[in-house]
Length: 276
Image 1 (cartoon, rainbow, N blue to C red):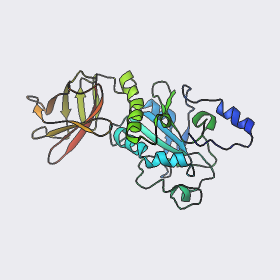
Image 2: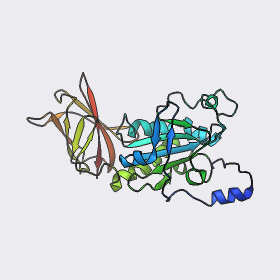
Image 3: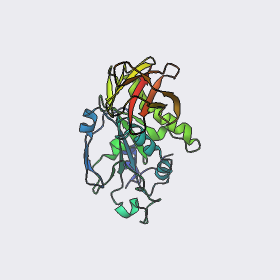
Image 4: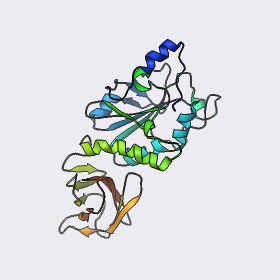
């Protein structure tokens, strides 16, 4: 169960709890992270990125357990700028009394170090500018998944998490995000260019061509992973005559989103493909 926010009166609590955020349109915001970078929700969504917004507090036990499960890190690594570049993860410290030392794990109101090995943006502001009634109506943590097509908060990833069954929980959360890809919110065009590689057709029934500009297809190897990071397919490159491209037969894979990595001795490139 989430740790419910403490309000001044029980009446205020009842009003707050009466607003469930899932299914509502996300309020726009502009925030600045600890590195001084600004993030505007509407701009991120307009670029076609799914937004995963974690609203937590450093003193919150369930928030820390979720953090220690590295779920946001795994999602960021897989879908973020260094992965398929389809998701933006934001961590919002929603208790305005929290200082930087608490995020660093040295303050009194903290469960531990929240910053080490964290590459996604962390926002800690006072006063808090995001609406609790919108973004954490039932308490901390609330991990909002925001649709880039219509700005609707589609899910709370924390609701997909079971502390006693972490691997299955990550799978459940990946399924929530993958729904965007399956429904056409992301990666729905015939060609999708990512990380200097173009893969088509995309979505595909299994037979795909990967055209590259940064990797010589000669002597290249292919590794295909699912969104849990598990390698499900490996092969040597089947070259396309007259092109710096390879042909892959992924028809044996289950429907879903996959990451294709092509590498040789000097370079590598990645692309994302959706198998129908």
